[in-house]
Amino acid sequence: MTEGNDWTKKELENEYIGTMTAVTIPVDIHLRGKQHVLDFFEMKRILSEAELISLAECGCRKRVKRCDSPLDVCIGLDRKAEEVTKEGVGEKASVEEALQALRRSHDAGLVHIAYTFSGDEKPRYICSCCSCCCHSMSALVRFGIPEAVTASKYIATHNRDTCIDCGKCIERCQFKARAFENGKLMFNAARCFGCGLCTSTCPTKSTSLVKRE
Image (cartoon, rainbow, N blue to C red; front, side):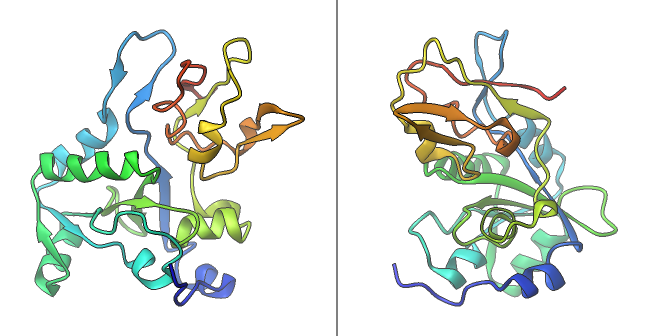
């Protein structure tokens, strides 16, 4: 895809970082000690508490155009949902419609991030982000601004005994927490933000999420 107008480090620092809190939200995760998948538990709670929900296209991917990930997966809540629908850039959505959008974006390997703006107690946007296009993910991964995204309360594990070094989790990890070293898959926990993308596609269930200590 042809690249568009990319972010600059100065723009990210001045216009985004510091004006909002971006927190990863794990979706479709496996928790150690549980025998079932806790499907969208945190996201569904956030959506259910909102009085109004909207769905719109991702402004970051429309602007930067570095990938072909789904566009129509940007979720607005309450005041932001009202603004989006009034401006005609998004439509009202039900909790189930928003969850369906999250399922599609999870399958596409996008990280779900809840954005809380200065002065707000609750998230106003839930975005499905990629490190190649989206402002906060770009700030963290591409420009090395550590405060751009806050990790979830979970962290991934890596069972070396059952891992078959297939590399699927490397493809899924937007934070570059996994890589091959001398033919073996290595996991750098310091880079893990607990998004859960690696857990749902591991063929041997060698990765799961546990609560951070």
